[in-house]
Image 1 (cartoon, rainbow, N blue to C red):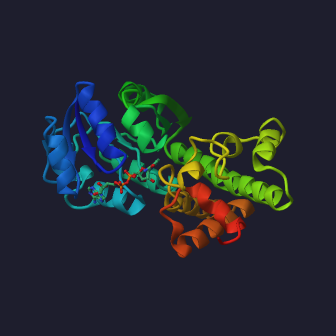
Image 2 (cartoon, protein in one colour):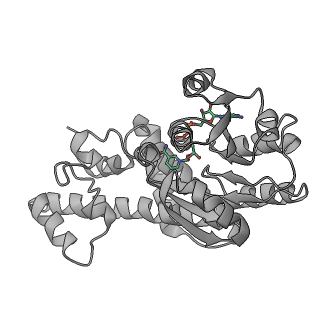
Length: 295
Ligand code: NAD
C-alpha cells in the first residue's frame, strides 16, 4: 500500500521503519531534513509538503508533537486536506485534545475523507519493537480498514468508539497514571521516613490493596524494581514533560466538559513544579524527589 507518513520524530521514524519492513511503499514529510535522509535510504520517497505526500497516498498517517502541529499539517495551504483524494483514509496517531480530533474529522468529512484518531502507548521502545497499543476513535468501517496496518506497528489495536474517543482513552489513562505515580511516591517516602525497609514496604503494597502498575512494575523508589527508571537515575522511560503535556490535555478537556478532576489538576501542578525545577527531562517517576530530603 502507498502510505503518506508525516511527522518522523522519536515515535514516527521507527513506526515508519516498521511499515517499510512490512513491504509498504512510503512517501514522507517532516520539517527535519536529516530524518528524511535516513529513511530515504531505506527506499522511502520524500515529498515537498504534506499536500504532495497526501496526493499520492492510499492512506495518510500523521505523528506530530501537539494539536497546533496537527491543525497546521492538515489545514495549511500546502496541507493534507489541500491534496488528498476523496475516499483516502487518514489516521492521526499524535496525542492531542479530543476536540481538535473532532474538528479535523469534520473538516475532512466535507471532502469525503474519513479521519480517525489513534494515539498510542508503549513509548519509543514499543514503537521500535512494533508492540504499541493504539487507542482508535473511528467509524467501524474505517477501523476495519486501519486495523491491519496498525497491527504492523503495534500489538493491541483497540477500537474505543467514534472519532475523539481514542484521545479520551489516552488522556484518562495517563491522568490516572500521573496520579498513581504521585500516590506511590508519597506512600514509599512516608514508609521510609517512618523507618520501614522500602523493599519490605513495596512487597507488602504489591500483595495488598495499594498495588498498581506504578508500585509493581515502575516503582519510583530507587532499587525496588531493577528495570524501572528509578534504578538508573530516572533516565529513559516516559519524560515528565510528556506527562505534563498529557495532564494539561486532561484538565483542559475536563474544563470543557465541566467535569471536576481534583486529583488530576493537583498532579498537573506537581509536574509543573517539577518541570520548573529543571527536571522535566527526567522520567516522570522522579516526582518522588519532591518527597525526599536534598542530599
Ligand atoms: P517528536 O518531537 O520526537 O517528533 C515530532 C516530529 O514532528 C518531528 O520530527 C518534527 O520535526 C515533526 N514536525 C513538527 N511539526 C511539523 C510540521 N508542521 N510538519 C511536518 N513535521 C512536523 O515527538 P514524538 O516523541 O515522536 O511524539 C509524537 C507524538 O506521540 C506526540 O503527540 C507525543 O505526545 C506522542 N507520544 C509520544 C511518546 C514518547 O514516548 N515519545 C509516547 C506516546 C505518545
